[in-house]
Length: 172
Image (cartoon, rainbow, N blue to C red):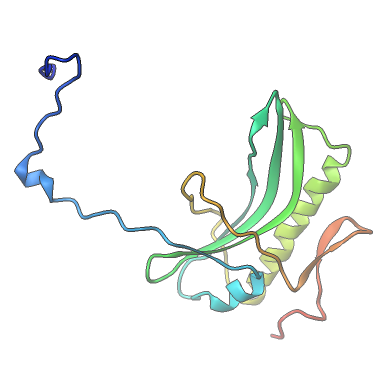
């Protein structure tokens, strides 16, 4: 491999762009993320012919001296026909970790609540004959996403779990 010639000021020279390559790649599309504040509104807007991506995930927070607070989320997404990403993010709980280990005394309840929220969201999807692909669409770093909520899934303080409110659930 031949090294690039130096421009004389200790900066590497930049090779000239090839005329054939200069305009050959199409510009990257601008990504648009459309956040739904209500899960049921997101579900109503979905295109049943397109894949739905959904999963429980941990969004790591910043770490300071070994202490980190993570968000336990359930995320549902779909790429719309125009290429935009539609999404609804539901926060189940936050969990503080100390050098990677759960620090909150009720961490097991928080984790169980997160799993129960994921189960309730899966039930909502199944009720609408949607089978989610367990995946998520990455978003640009430092991109603030809307946090949503549900009108049919409630946190039950007594059981410390999320449950579907069958009285307000969508009729079949």
